[in-house]
Length: 173
Image (cartoon, rainbow, N blue to C red; front, side):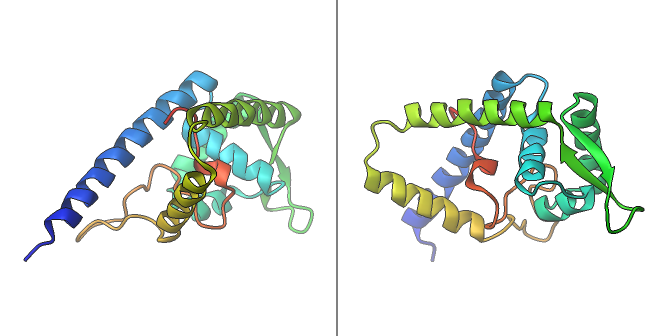
């Protein structure tokens, strides 16, 4: 016996999260046409961590190393990140934001925050706190596991619970 109201709610959640993700990607493209959502998220992580290795990005976001390599290459081409030798192990390259990368990220984050402020302006403080808590709870569960298959979201970052909240947000989702 299935719980019809629960199934209906799960179907609604799946549909709405899909719509959210699509709007998030479109909004990210409007904010910085040359900085896709995945690249933006990786840049934000690099800035937040004051530099990190590409393998750290792949592990943190559960991305394939080739995906990270392509995205980092794009960020380097745009002059937003640079590689520097690790002072403790010169064989290791550490990604650092450039001044331009830090500026682009700050500008984009300000735009995103303003868009969210506008979109949520009519929500009560209690509703915002509840929504934030639900999102934290949902994301704390980790990546979505598909029945008899790989984990979903391998090609798009899904922030872990210790990620900055801004990593997963985009205006007008």
